[in-house]
Image (cartoon, rainbow, N blue to C red; front, side):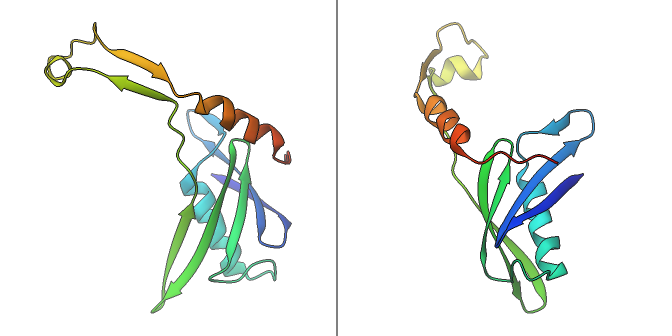
Length: 124
């Protein structure tokens, strides 16, 4: 279940509660669905085809709701963060032998956490 709050022109804050987990930091499905409902309600804060900034406790994404031949599509626009690189021999992986796996941090997690700290904080 997702909760959305309009925070500005083309801006929403969305928080999602998942059964068995509680409130999550981010949920792409929840942010997309809330964007669709917001656009369909047509409260003057967003229109179909416009890019929206969607904030959540784990960061932000952009969405765009489109209508094509009576059907709706949602573009979810965001980044992926690679936090580690892993090296393992394919034969070892197939045998589920993880003793010789090498794991190295990319350092991106620190940069992402800094990005999160600079975002405005919203709560319900």
